[in-house]
Image 1 (tube, protein in one colour):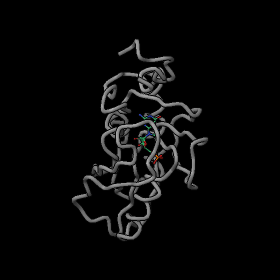
Image 2: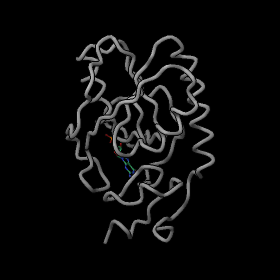
Image 3: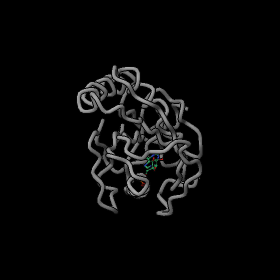
Length: 179
Ligand code: 5GP
């Protein structure tokens, strides 16, 4: 898999350190709020794992699966809910955990849905932000790293469902998806 990576952007250690810092900030901001950490499958799995173990306050963990990429490297703009939440979010404080924000379509749709269902508050913590890709206005409150407009894989992020298990974030060589 390493041969398919053009450049490593963030190592395991850098990501884990950043997750620990963000977790400490969330701990302060959500001290008495018993928030729900809502991971968006499947890309957020390693990041939510790193965050939760450093948050020493009462939290619940839930997951939703929404898709906008359908196996390619650009967003389709159509966000589909593949797996919904099993619990009510009414009057609950929600922290959405995302792997990367690009166009902003996915989160805009999920935030609107959670607010419509009566969530007390909805914020986003994302491992990566790609602001140059933004099409709809969307500003995550908690950001790990800001990256340029490139297609990255690893640490949960896939290309065609592969590479999620890479222990770092790297830029995928264009020839891999131009084939
Ligand atoms: P958005 O709806 O903001 O365009 O995209 C969010 C979702 O698109 C992310 O959760 C992720 O699944 C996918 N995505 C966006 N940029 C990248 C990227 O550079 N690499 C990978 N693997 N997925 C991405």
